[in-house]
Image (cartoon, rainbow, N blue to C red; front, top):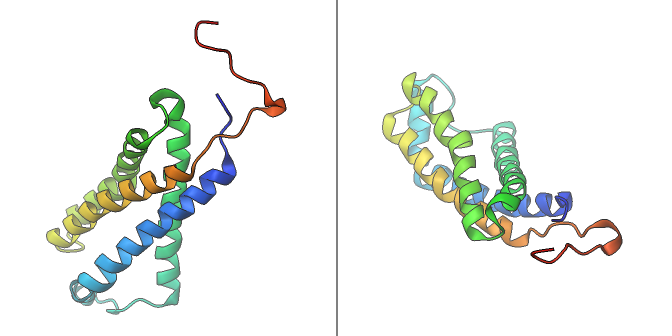
Length: 154
């Protein structure tokens, strides 16, 4: 078994982050833009987002992608390499970053229930799709000295 490849985690995580950020932009910045503006006005906040808020959202998307790839690399020895393991990692990240975060938001009635449900639902799609795509780039680091692993049964 090779060591976790940090460079590939970052590269795959950034690719996953691109998927997450594109989905977030299309869904929240285009399709649900007016609903989000209304929700913010109800809270007494400005309807639009400034550069600082947008930078924070984009950074969040990339950090979620990098975490998803780290998790994929960490569970590969147990579940094996491939898309099935990437889906497992993506769902786990979705639970942590989207589902659990949506529960208190919905419970406090900060935003309409539908808006929260839309965010959690699209989060499942983007987290899994991003993780699967990012995992496609991931390869474990070669053992130091080029040592090969023993054959099965050795």
